[in-house]
Length: 178
Image (cartoon, rainbow, N blue to C red; front, side):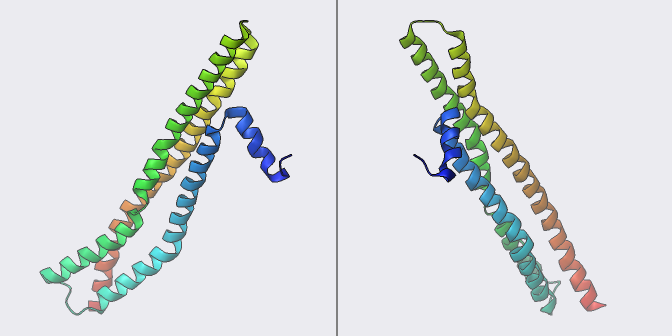
């Protein structure tokens, strides 16, 4: 007898196979990375951006080649911290449909094995098996679509923040000289 909190997981495995647990694990990792990025952007990045602007305005030299190079290096470093998990997010998004396909293939193999062993062409049993076999593909694609939406939105935010950071640094210098 399974504990009550594991019962939904057992039903999930029964409905779509063990691959659904893998897809659920990838989805949990994907969405935890997404949550971490949201929290990083809302808390850590904003503090770091303010500190960078304060360091830049505290400098006396803003126009020399070395000052502009330093400003570019600082902004690249801060934006790189925003970009850091993007390759992992893209990997997990790409992995979801592949896991779904693996679940479908293994499910179809199980359906054909059971049909070969039963020696009867039960259309209802075959339809039920095919429905179970396609469930991992559905789950993998659904997780991938949501992950793709988040990843593309994060890339858009990073591009916007890169431009805004440069604009804010320029405005901060203008304010300090005015």
